[in-house]
Length: 353
Ligand code: KG4
Ligand code: ZN
Image 1 (cartoon, rainbow, N blue to C red):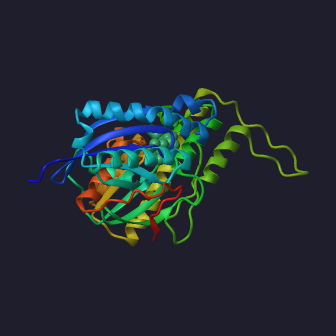
Image 2 (image 1 turned 30 degrees about the vertical axis):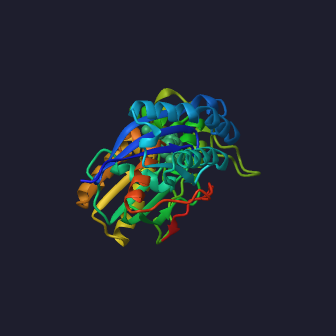
Image 3 (image 1 turned 30 degrees about the horizontal axis):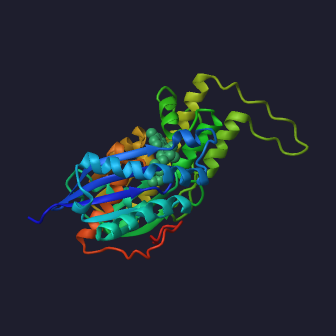
């Protein structure tokens, strides 16, 4: 058996400053240590991520995060086999911090650098601390910035089968929570409130497109807005009655109905993608995959279609550096690395269809 390879991985694409050490041992990728410094407090008062504040916070927090990850792993820098960062897609100022730091670290220790795609890394997280999934696979990435269905011939060969045409599913949760005054990030708040609500109280439905597995969540958000604030009256038409007051029962019912509509949309998109591209394995990652109703839907779908289901562990669903390390480990094992001239890029390089 070949010697284990330790990789230092950095993630700074949005509002989490994260460093991790992962270890490639044969075919298995283990999370050796992690340090995540969340910026929730920095952005909470704005109800969303402020890009300039995010990159400044990364600058302050990345070195302590790297130091903590290496200390927890008890690994000297020179024992690392490579240094990796998510270099795309994301907020460009934030990506630059992690990508530049990873390049500098790799150069300083004379080891390879790898820049990996954050969206693809959300699915590579399914490889962490478990037996590797079998391919070909269909993967769902549902997060604050992305809602994609990917076809993966292998862990490294991914194509986009479907994507959202407007808001991402996590963004829809965040905006719904903001409309309801439930705080930010919104997904966990909506899930908590939905637990005591009636999912059939409101007839919410996400948008769909004929002959396509693409998603649309923007109209669903507007439907919720109208249920809360009332439907605007057309000019020169009588005023519509105001909606009932927003008491705890109504909030719970709105959350449960909204969450159920998102779950149905993800399920329908996956059904369509699987009809067109049969696969034996279903992968899922991204912040929204933390949601219990989403996880239950995926379990039922996999059972119905006899698919091997690999759900990202809850702690690796939201942005983290171990998932960057997982994709970097898979690439390193395939003999790949990147030049130090590799740029940070705001867009994913995953090809469509
Ligand atoms: O993967 P992630 O950390 O960031 C992006 O790559 O965008 O995902 C963050 C998103 C947020 O929109 C958050 O509201 C959502 O994941 N999220 C959830 C839950 N936990 C986090 N959405 C629904 N239910 C949850 N329990
Ligand atoms: Zn993400």
